[in-house]
Image (cartoon, one colour):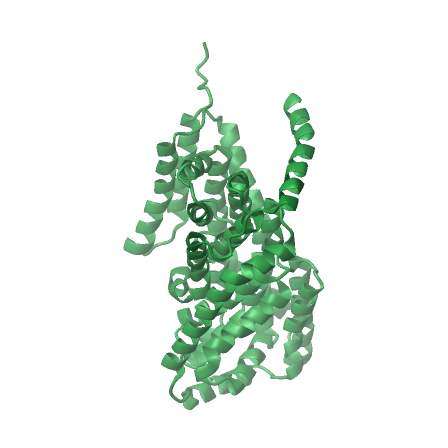
Length: 485
């Protein structure tokens, strides 16, 4: 006899306890105590680990889950660091001030919100990245909106909506490529099938932002306030159209499928060079702004609040949230705690509508628990792939449901890497911009409605069915060999 507990699947009530141990402390921290969420997330990590031990998993397996979770977030952490550097260097070099200056000169308040949505949509569609869009064009639009007198959460919602439109629909986007690959359909079939639900959600978003634009910007712009901002900017920086080149460099490199990290780095280097030429920056100035950000001292409060930001150090808070959140997600996945909840839900899904609803709710829950949209896409796609085939549904229905939920809702969760990044980059709290990120929460709603009404829910065709069966047959020998080992 040994004291070692035999491993088993966690009971569903045990998994629910782990979820509640994350959600309740975080809710209390945010709503009641108005404090940070790092320690509440660690409490969830502790409870999830104890549940894993109770189910017979060893500490080494639980620790391995935590480390895998952190490893999955390393690319996001590196991008966060260099985006922090980019923001500091772009402000110091006059890139962001130049974008603000020209934007305030040409943008009229009544069209600002729908224009923001469309500009971010085009940028993200062309580049395939929501993070790149908000980290470049987005921060400039936030500043322009503030100068025009718009509440920052409203502007943040329009920026986020446009940025995630392209992240969801662009053939250059990694999520747009990942979702169909996980379920067994091709990229362009997936994109075409998404146009139905995405088109409805985007159309409603455009109408809502247009109405809000007239509500907040229906009157004349505060010319005196705008002139003060323009004077404060021009008093600190040399404004020149050539300083708009770094954003163009980043966009062109993204279109050419250059990976995010080298692409953003080129944006930093080009801005640093222009800053030396136009602002007279020294190497020490660049190092200071790259790590600690830029501190504006124009004497104009609006300008100083707009331009005092950036630097690698500014991202440390967000990085710590991602690390502790991914520890929790790694444990939940490695100890099968989330899997048993999904399996329980799957038993109740009998119709196409209920199956699509279950998929969408699972993806959203995964964003809450696993804290990373890529993990949510992979997990929800893998969990429901066989169920869709058994119901005779084409896999493009599943890939659409996954993208309509996992991709667009990650930025609505403060402790998810998406929400943490967007909040840190735009300077707007996640829960503050959430009500105005219309596109992001309309997509899952529209997709669920389409599912229950049977709108564009296509059955699987014989060719796709035979191809998937053939692919399954080809994987069996390898799986059996792996089991034999």
